[in-house]
Amino acid sequence: MESQRFKEARLKLRSMRKADRTRDLSSNIKSLLSEDWSPEEAFTLRCELVAELHLRGRNREAEVLLQAEVEREPNEPFHSLSLAEHFHYYDVDLQRSLSNINQAIAKANADGKFMYQALGVQARIAVETQNWPLLEETLRDLAAYQHTPGNVDVFPETDFLKCIPSGVVAPDAIEAYVRRVEYLRSMNYSTMQGARGEKA
Image (cartoon, rainbow, N blue to C red; front, side, top):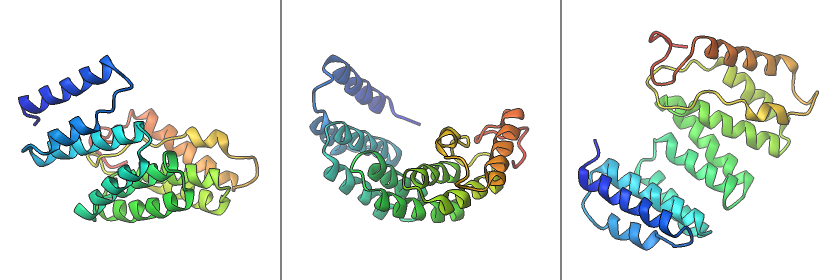
């Protein structure tokens, strides 16, 4: 649970950002990080700092912070996923992004969180690099994945499906994933609450 002091600090940051979108707030966030916070609050502030650095094009500094999160919690899939997204969208290097997403998937297999999200990122990278065998494998993994309600994740994503050229992957791989997504939608599946609590 966030403290009142933390809520006020974040509200102040939002107000400063709204007042001047061009203002670099990284020094303000660093100053906040020098104070005592709960582990969850400190992590949220570090995420705020990474987002601010990305916004200002300071990608190398953002990378250092993201790598520090991996070192802080080496078994947490979210941190490797964040690094993969960093190399996907900011300091673009799709091979490094793919390397980090592979790590995220391995950790998600053990941890149970963020598997849909990690596989979705891998699917997008596979499309962008035209790695069709990897894409087909990813689609089959997405179709087969059995998520446990309560494990933090996104709902399985489909935006990349429209980007797949005809004939580059087996049609049944696409069809199986589409059926899976439609099934989950039909039961109004929530990754946090499930559908009446069962595994899906």
